Amino acid sequence: MRTGYRPRTLVLELVMVAAAVAFLFPVYALVTLAFKDPSQIANRPLSLPNPPSTGSFGAAWRSASLGSALLNSTLITVSSVVLLIVLGSLAAYFLARTATRLSYTLYILFLVGIILPFQLGMIPLYQLVNNLGLLGTYQGMILFYTGIQLPFTVFLYTGFIRSLPADYTNAALIDGASHLQAVGYVIFPLLRPITGTVLILNAVHVWNDFFTPLLYLGGSGRETVPVRVFAFVNEYTSDYGLVAAGLVLAALPILVVFLLLQRYVIRGFSSGLKG
Amino acid sequence: MTITAQAVRRDAVRAPRRRGGIAPPWLFAVPALAVYALVVLYPALSGAGSAFTDWSGVGEQRSFVGLDNFQQLFHDDQALGALRNTLLLTVAIVVIQNGIGLLLALGVHTNIKSRMTLRVIFFAPVVVSPVMVSFLWKYVYNPAPDAGLNAVLGAIGLGGLRQDWLGNPSLAIWSVAFTVIWQCAGYSMVIFLAGLEGVPAELHESAMVDGAGTVARFRHITWPLLAPALTINLMLSTVGGLTLFTQIIAMTNGGPGYATDTLSTVLYKQAFVYGKFGYSTAVALVLAIFVAAVSFIQIGYLRSRETAA
Image (cartoon, rainbow over all chains, first blue to last red; front, side, top):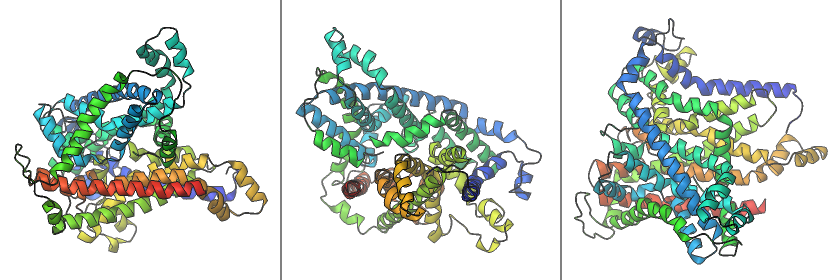
């Protein structure tokens, strides 16, 4: 309800800002910690770093091998999301534009995957990945994320394609385009809004996931950022300044992307789930 | 991730029906189906099957043991404690996270000047890895009197309230729950916010003309129309709570003792620490049944509320 800016609005504004300040306290504690040398940490835990020291950042970057972890995470995230968009939209095109018992059964089969907790198949899948020789490889992780995120991706794409009129593709098909061309040149450009949602939700999930990369990549040298950070923090647990600097560096890339694309990210998270 | 009641209802009505157009070849669905079957369907079925065996995970050696694993589960203090913790965490997270999320949404869905900045601030933790958020809070919960939260309490004259937040067995589970709520309240907020933006302003205006106060308008207009957003939020937070793993492993590893073990941490430890793969999949099956049951109950109940509204 938007009315004028009244005294009540000012009170609400102050309350909300106070809530945000309290909410941000942990972040303040971590960031200031990262800029302090050990004597400042011991003597003045809550104050601003004075003088600020940046030595912890270089040390943390090297000790946690964050550079290669960022590359690993980027490679796995980009590949998985591209595969999800391609496989998901192709399957959804079939599911949304075919009204047979087969397509309906397949659609339900994909929906089941949304409710199924992955823990149920966790161990057989681990064995399978191991038997295929994919433990500790990028391919294993990419295959995993593509499979595990497909139900949700197919669900979003199918709902969206159903809401598009079939006339556009029919016109292209009658003019002699193949189905592949119809998807590539007609459907896919129309899917842009939902592709944005698919991209954001899947990318954030894959980038931040921890459990499976811990199992599949631990000790392989191809660890993603969360797995490296986990090992790093557990190794240097009592060196607070170093740990804080490592956490700040590791969280920074996704936070920067979020701040640049905040409107799209928030829209993706709040709209993608509405089907 | 979840599906909304609306979508489910629509699909049920829409079942097989001609949609017009030239049907694409089924080959289009084959790559997706192949990957999905390999990564999700086959392992899930195989996992459900192993729950009735004594599989150790080494080789293919396994024999059928019927319901032994489930019987063991109900005599295993760690598993029973984990079940209790999981339910407790889920209830606490669902209620508090959505309560705070709703208040934040109502607060920023006004014409306060800072509303856009506040949305970004409250949402930001959602995009950060739970591992990093957990380590951040592990520092906040530092047991030393002059660090983190304890230092703040000391500085504002509440030194008597200092705690060993993660080391005290009866407190640790609440400290973990609070971390999850801090990270996810912004997620609930943006979903409620999308719901609030769908409430027509005319409804509020005409109710105001009729003399309805803020509370009455919330109860009779806003709240019923928030039902779809509430459905999504409850489903998301319930499934998230039931499958909680990362925050526990990063902050307490299930301790002190078994005080913060959840079904997910127990099934992980049973498999990868103790090598009892059969038993572990039995715990996973119990978890899966919980998640499925809760999903169906919530879809059913909230769908009836949505229709009523």
